[in-house]
Amino acid sequence: MEYVTLNNGVQMPKLGLGVFRITDLEQAEEVVYQAIENVGYRLIDTAAAYGNEKAVGAALRKVSVPREDIFVTSKLWITDVQDGYEGAKRGLDRSLMNLGLDYIDLYLIHQPIGDLYGAWKYLSEVYEEGKIRAIGVDNFTQARLAEFIHFNKIKPAVNMIEANVFHQRKEDHQAMEKRDVQMIAWAPFSAGAVGVFTLPELTTIGDKYQKTVGQVILRWFMQRGIVAIPKTVRVERMKENLDIFDFELTEEEMAIINHLDQGGGYSLPETADGFENLLRALGNFSVD
Image (cartoon, rainbow, N blue to C red; front, side, top):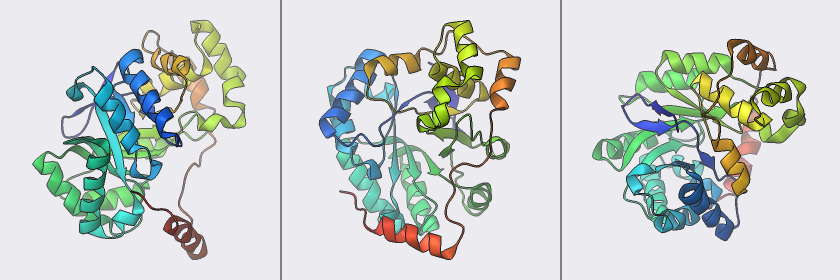
């Protein structure tokens, strides 16, 4: 496993397992258990909004791997962020209880919506107390991230954004590197869209190294210094995704993949109506 060092000195695995949309709690528990105990994963990424923190916690209690060797990420949902300081306290306490942990390695504000500064104030305090080893943000634009850094004492350790070979987020990555904020990629396989696993540019590179397209993509992320958290429920795919540290792409191969970029990616609604529709949809969601 390769690691990155966050801006506060904490080491984080460069490759982890995401559990987004694993809603069957028995399955989620088994997936996380297998990933840690039998495959070798040391980074697990969950969130209050995923509804499976309790399953992740149950798996963590079953594995033989020491807690200090496992890096757990969770996230504060909008329904808590909207209540600022008190909402952040409520959300973190709930996540700690659901996970059955005394501390979380990385805790993120899940979306740039709500009383961000009030929530960050509380997270900064408990970070300094040791309940969280690192704090960060999720889906922040360059402008919002720069503003957040300027007006807060504690800088986010990471910004998690959508990134894949079609939406490589090169400028966002450069902006984060400039500010010493680690980029984490969600949906690194673009959810399998646009035939990504059959692209000839990627299959040719994979054939050279006897690797799959997925392994080539993840290796490309590793060489860019970006943490990636692919999601899978299949043990064989977990093993495949982790088996990427025995080869290295050439500069030419990296350039071939770089040319697949189409720009764009995840963004919040630009119009007031779009934003209000999003908030109405989010208002129907709750965490427990």
